[in-house]
Image 1 (tube, helix red, strand yellow):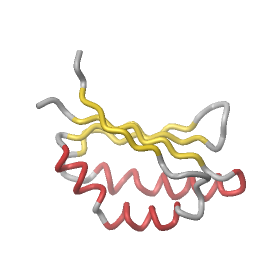
Image 2 (cartoon, one colour):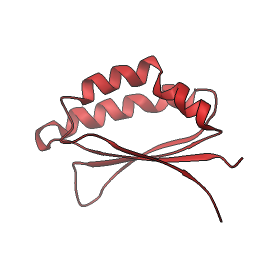
Image 3 (cartoon, one colour):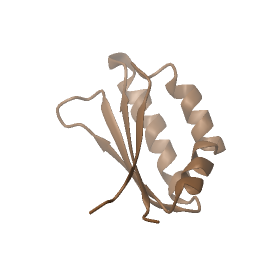
Image 4 (cartoon, rainbow, N blue to C red):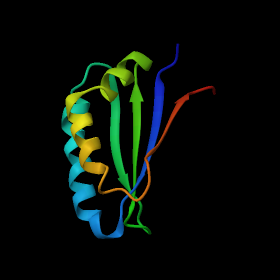
Length: 97
């Protein structure tokens, strides 16, 4: 089965951009060290400072599910609950061509 790709789009409140940025950056190192993580990159929209997007690649759904249950992600989700303007939009994809 092909690798799993994830696009996670997050919109910060205007007054919490710095804290959102810091919280999201804190996910990079521990997530990249997780079993099954191939790529975990954070992007920041150049024209909208509230817009952050993770582009991820995982070996399979089980690896992603383990990440979603990890302590560092659960802790970040608690912090982000007060920092984001709306719920995160997280989508799973498989390459088909």
